[in-house]
Image (cartoon, rainbow, N blue to C red; front, side, top):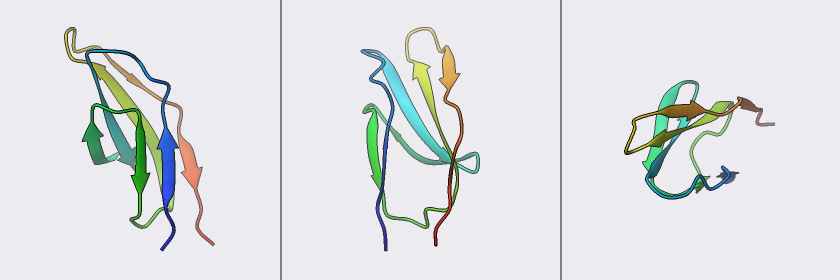
Length: 67
């Protein structure tokens, strides 16, 4: 099985990152980089949430196609 490495620009302190595939949370963490070894095909985004204000920001989508 392949491994997918995703990175978001580090948004600093007091943020969490939610990695989503097809709008379903795959991982929540306080780090900007993740490796996945699940079925990789799908539309991936990352949602960054400021833990103080609750203000979210979602990345542009990246489509992964497995061959």
